Image (cartoon, rainbow over all chains, first blue to last red; front, side):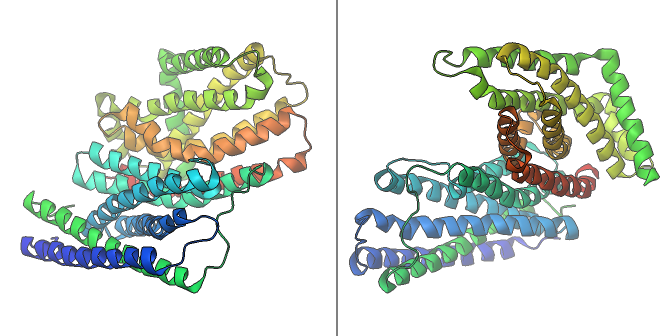
Length: 232
Length: 226
């Protein structure tokens, strides 16, 4: 039994409240970023995008790690709620990935002089995005509910294991063939105002993740209950 | 151990016998590989890019894509007459089914590679003198891990709608580490570089093989159970 319809509606409502708070917090973060944080000396205003890009990347990685962990738990405990949660986290992760993969090139064009480069971190995140698109496609292509959950969990786990391998192989690839252009982004340490704004943004994005996943999970739950599902 | 090996060898032998009688999958995979080699030849500007520069990438793109075709066959076969059900009902461990399919896939892909290599020499004028053994070693090392993931993915893909499309979508991201490793190692082997220069890549391939073979073997029962 996976709970009642009223219960799932409560999850959705709570999620919407958290999402609202997160969005308000992010408006605050961007006011802070634009008005109260110094402009970076070399990159100028383009650097402001880091306050969206880096936290979006963080939330995407968080989503996908949680998919991997929850998938493992699903194969062990076979609780359909875990599967629904993994699905919710994967969907939200895809949204954050799109945010990360669009803000990245917008920043890179003026700063690196190119939209894209096959740097280890870029390649890694792109392939994470592809793996989870595959995850999504697989879920859509399996009819039986229990089978869909098992297959998705297997891909979730394999994807998590693949990540370090892609990183390692692209890293080896790059260190053996060094880039002619210096592609290292900003200095290692940030002025305190920038760090403050960035940390605030990380907080906002993490909260947004929690809110969106709750809503998505609640929707999945309600859908499952309506379809008459005591799964497995 | 024998409980696992005996049924898996039997399954691999069965797949071989079926293939031997029909010869459709192997034949189409090798023809496909030959065609890709030809296409590659015309997809480059011969004046600006010598075939040797392109050779490692061509070899790997061709063999991996042909391998994907043969992987599709492994579980597609069991769809006829509900043979998959019989395999599941058989008093053998699901790991034995995985191992059997894995062995058969390794052999099929090996046969395709054996056909591609001479064609590759013929079309791309690559000198294999003294490097053939090393090259075969890299091919084996790259195939071991990639085919483990491929066997598992094809077991899932075959039970979805659009099975033929689902397999590459699931599998291609997993191809990246072995593909990078194999292309880099092949480039160095063809350039007669010392072994120390490719050890890093060989280690990466070996690690990938061990990790993914083990994980795929362990999770396969969750794919096959009803």
